[in-house]
Structures are given as C-alpha cells and as structure tokens.
Image (cartoon, rainbow, N blue to C red; front, side):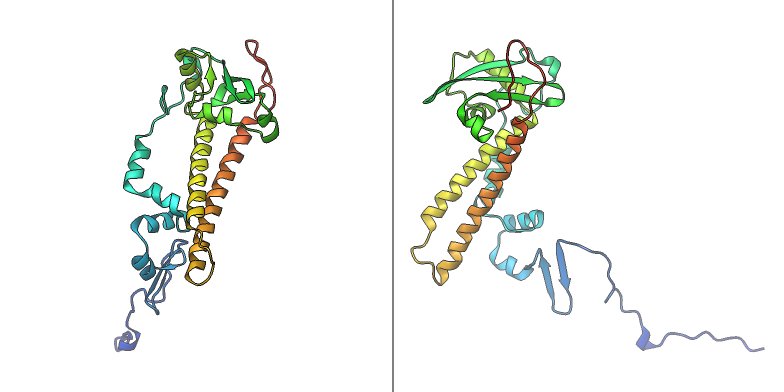
Amino acid sequence: MPDTVKDTPSASAAATGLRGVVVGSSTVSDGVGDKGELIYQGYNIHDLAAHSTFEEVAFLLWNKRLPNRIELDQLKPGAVLNNRRRRPMTGGAAMVSLTDLKRNPVALTVVDGDGSHNISAERGKGGKVWLTCQCAASHAEGWCKHRLDLLCFRFDSVRGADAETRTAFERIVSGTPLGEAGQNVDRAMKAFDECLRLFDEGRPEKIVGHDLGKFTDLVSDLAACSSELEDALGTLRRLLERKPRHCCRGFAYLPV
C-alpha cells in the first residue's frame, strides 16, 4: 500500500505575519496601517510631532486632551522641580498620628474688615478634621477665605496666637484630606486668576479669521481652569460640611 503524501501549502497560502490580526486593544492610540497613520487620543502623530512639545503630548496621553497654558507651564522642568521642592510648613506632608498631637483642638482668632472671627480646629480618628468659622461667608457659601488661608498656613490675619499655637494647628491639618483639599483650592484659584489675566490680555478686538482660533483657545483655557476650581471647591465644601457629634473642651462645633 503506497504511503500517503500530505498536502503542502502553496506559495499563495504563505503566512503573512500579523496582517489583519487584532493583537490588543487600546484607548490611547490607533494605528491605521493601510493609511500609514498613527493616532494618539484623536490626534495624528505627524501633526503632534510638527506642532506639539514633549510635555503637551505627555499630558495628552495622561489626560486624553491637550493642556491649557497653565497646565503646560506646570509641566515644564523648572515648574516640576519647584513643585517637588514644595513642602508644607512645620509638621511636613505626612499626617501626624492622633496620639502624637500635643494640642487638639486648637482655637484661633482671625481679624478682617468685618470684625473678628473665632476659628477652631480638631482632628478626629481616621484623619477627619473639623474646622469651623461662624463668619457670614461660611454660612452663605459653605467655605470662607479665613479657613482657606489657615489651611494654606497663612497666618497674616491671625491675632494673639503664638508660634506654639500655630504649630499645633499645622500639625492637626497637615497631610489630612481637608488640608490637601485646601491646598488644591488655593492652587486652582491661582491658576484661574492667571487664566483670566491671559484672557484679558490676549482677547482680540475683532473675532474674525485667525483671531477666532486664538479667542477659542483662550476661552477653552478659561473654561478648563474654571471647571478645575469648581471641582476643588466642591471637594472642600464636602469636607467642611462634616460635623462631629460632640463638643470638646468648651468648643461647640456647629454646621457651617
């Protein structure tokens, strides 16, 4: 009985590698082989190479959009280095344990054009901080500049508080969610102010032709900064709305 001869593939059926085979999925990039295109988050790689910086493309990959001017400035090497050098004042960035707090709560008095305002800060378990102020802005807006300044360790308007009291306050809020929320609001407010300045300075007199694109970029930057500020303030308000169910050492913690 003759041996069976197996069929061999013809030249036309030769393997073609991975052509037409899906090897993975990605929401970051898209390769269109037939057209010779590589797309990053909706942008052609050739356009990005010609018109964008390394920092802009990195931000695009991280955030699925191009940065505004403020965000781009924060990505530049000098700004990144400065951010890494920033440290909170006494107490450092780490949250001091509750048992290591020598004074808790702490009371401060802030004086401004509307009079004096008593502010109290207390740390509870799990890093919860109750920071109260009975000024009109707190009741109306859910937050106030007095508390924001203190969360950023600005004591210019504080009266009658010695260095020990200020240090005790910093140790209560440093590294806590409320402390970080205050810092985020402060940064977002500064970024919004800068965006508003750039908008006022760069706004064209006539919005036609090439100036239309410039105006659109300015509006987009301002809208992005506004959105970030709104988000940061929302987080701060939610954390400030937390209220304890007790009073401590004579300080009554009321909803603000």
